[in-house]
Amino acid sequence: MTTTLETPPLRHQLARQPAPADPVQRGRPLRRAGLLLGYLAWRSAAIALFLLLWEFGPKYLLDGQTRVFLPPLHEDLQAGWRLVQNGQLQADLRASLTRSVIGFGLAVLTAIPVGLLVAWYRPVESFLNPLLEIFRNTAALALLPVFILLLGIGETSKISIVAYASFFPILLNTVSGVKTVDPLLVRAARTLGLSRFALFTKVILPSAVPTIFTGIRMAGSSAILVLIAAEMVGAKAGLGFEIVNAQSSFQIQDMYAAILTTSVLGVGVNYGFVRLERHFSRWRTGTAVAR
Image 1 (cartoon, rainbow, N blue to C red):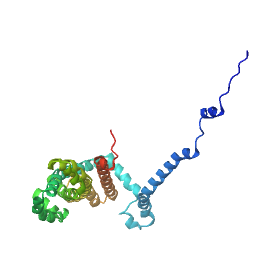
Image 2 (image 1 turned 135 degrees about the vertical axis):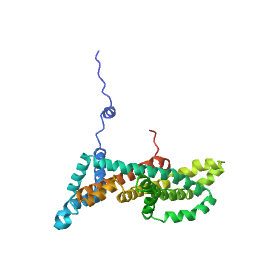
Image 3 (image 1 turned 90 degrees about the vertical axis):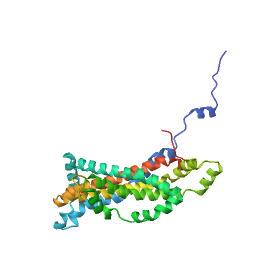
Image 4 (image 1 turned 45 degrees about the horizontal axis):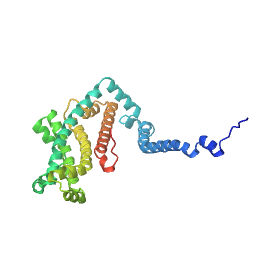
């Protein structure tokens, strides 16, 4: 008695074999990586060209006398590294950050509640608005001599001028954020029977968060700029002091190193606030993820 082995049908044999890789599917990761590299190159092209001009422009475009006041980029970076090694740049950066954080924190703690109060209660708005218009149209640096005369050249005057410069961008954007909430959301919340407090905390305030953070970002930039100017007038440490001291001592490379540090600090502060704004506004785009 003989037995024969049955061969499976052809379609089953083909089903068991792995499907050949699609060339299009294999090329997608490379294409995405290429697009990403191209996007990053395009976004950084302007900065790269500026740095190249800074490096080679003084040598080939300026005469000998002017070149002294605009040294190449690599000399400025070397001066910055020397300041880092002797600890001077860290001390100046620490002093500037301490003043700006304290002044900016005071502005945030006072401007947001005042802005919410002004936007939510019309009698308060009509009473305070004329005074706020006067002060918000007065440049902070114009009042710097007043702060120095009243508070001296110590830390109090610098922190106060930073708080003053940061206060009004946060205040005005808080008021604008509350007033520009979608009326349909407010009507829907009232239809559902929300109390006045619940309406404010669950609808008005979350909707105003992006606009409030826009004011906080503007205030962060203003805080750094005003602080640098205040440190140039009277200080014994800080980035503004380092810029003026290096200029008066004819240490041009050190001056540009401090300026570069100020620029990097401003960009870092703005980037941090952008990330923070996205974190608190994730519900608006539906991209919230559990951490």
